[in-house]
Structures are given as structure tokens and as C-alpha cells.
Image (cartoon, rainbow, N blue to C red; front, top):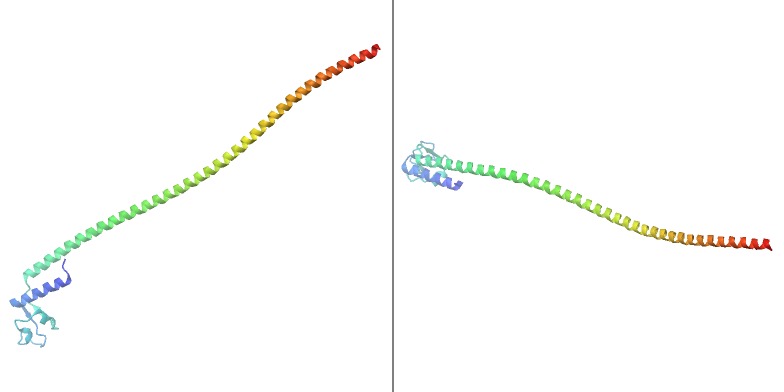
Length: 190
């Protein structure tokens, strides 16, 4: 596009060309007489720089059609560029909005995944603790079962031993009873 310096330069050139062709008459900065005077600013060689020093400005009777067309073309070109840039900015803003929405959606998904991961890890830790406790209970139960089985075996052994003693005692009782009867019978015979 055109910068302010380029526009000013083209404007200066167009004014100078109009002065050179005689279609632009400078206004005398030093007198209040008509624009055409015998003063220094009315000479045909008046330059645009000389006009800038003047407070009154210039009167333009006829402006170059080419300069007007070129200015219109420049304005149309600038409007086209502006429209293009506006469309590009609108598209970029839309893409930014979409990207922002995607970012926040992904952020929410990541936070949800983190929460799920933390929950799963907590559940796994709890399950591991429960499994450890169950294993300790199982080990304790096994030791108790072993102890009870030993006690049962001791009771069986004691019962068997008691049964043996019982049989022996019964046998000895019978033998003692038999001997007592025999002794009684001998005592009665005697």
C-alpha cells in the first residue's frame, strides 16, 4: 500500500504539474489582491515548496483527470486490500476461537483423565492394602488351623492313650475281681 509520504509526494507532483500546465493558480500569500498578482508567488515558476510556506494555500481550478483516476484506483486497491485483510483477520479470529475451544475441551479431558487416574490409583492402593490385610488374616488363620490340628492330634493321641489305659484298667479290674473271687472262695473253703 501507499504510505503517507508516498501520498504526499504524489499530491505534490500533481499540484506542480497543474501549476506547470497553468490549470492551477497560486494565491498570493503577501497581499489581499486577486489571486493573479505581480507578486513573487504568482510567477509561472512558483513551486509547491514555495506554496507550502504560504498561509493562504492554493486555488485549484482544474485538477488532472489522471490524478483523480489514479487516486480512485488507489482507494479501490486499498479497499480491496483492507477487505482482504479484514476477511483474513475474521478467518484467523474464527480459527483462534476454534483452537481456543479445542484447547479448553482438551484441557477438560486431560483434567478428567487425571481425576480418573488418581481415582484408579487410589482404588489400586486400597485394593493392595485390602489384599495385604487379607493375606495376613489368611496366614494367621493357617497358623491357627495348624495349631488346632496339632491340638486335635494331641487329643486323639491322648484319647487313644486314655483308651489304652482304660482297657488296661478294665483288664486289671477284671483280673483283680477274678483274684478277689478266687481269694474269697479260698477263704470260704478254709
